[in-house]
Image (cartoon, rainbow, N blue to C red; front, side, top):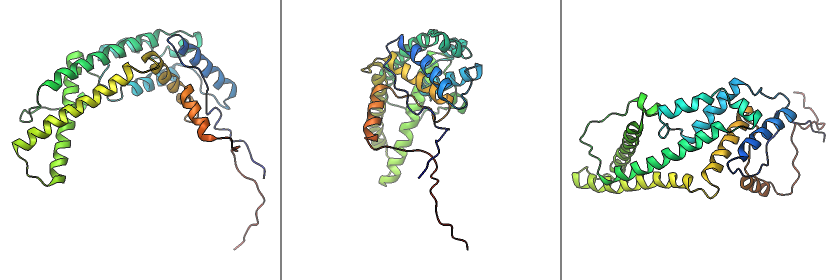
Length: 259
């Protein structure tokens, strides 16, 4: 059986080394060079590509728009159309600023969670989380605190309502107080654990952000281009095993049945 090569899947794995702070620039440069060399129709590394990398990186780090403030985005946006030049010249102004701001905001959010967890949520107070607020970056640290508070409260209210409906137990102040206390502690602990995993990543937060940035660059070239850090690449190769794989369209001769 003869097989044709599958041209649209050009680079499915880039095996690159881990990234202490100055290494990501080298790796992004290497990704761009490999794509330009091996891709059939590489997307140009231009202003449009820069903007796409910028947006995808921020989305991966803060998809609910909680941690970065509008002032942070203003600072970072200076690089929106300059990432292509940074990649070509192996510069790292964007990554340095991004890492510094993200680390600082995560630490501040962790402290805010400690303050929020002290007091029970008062569900008799009428508060609103508007669509604009939910989909926008907070204006400042006070806005970040408010958004974290409202999102936690919103989540707890829904969980309480679901529990009461599913359990069939009639609502009562005693039941609501009991549920609120447990759910508040659980929700705060869950978010704090997520923050801790990033801040205390074994590879370091710089390495974690570097990997996300490389992944954003690779995917922005096309959905079939991927960046694997060393540990994920090892798992990938283990999963594949030693069995040869072939890609393409089979052209074996088959008997046609004519109706």
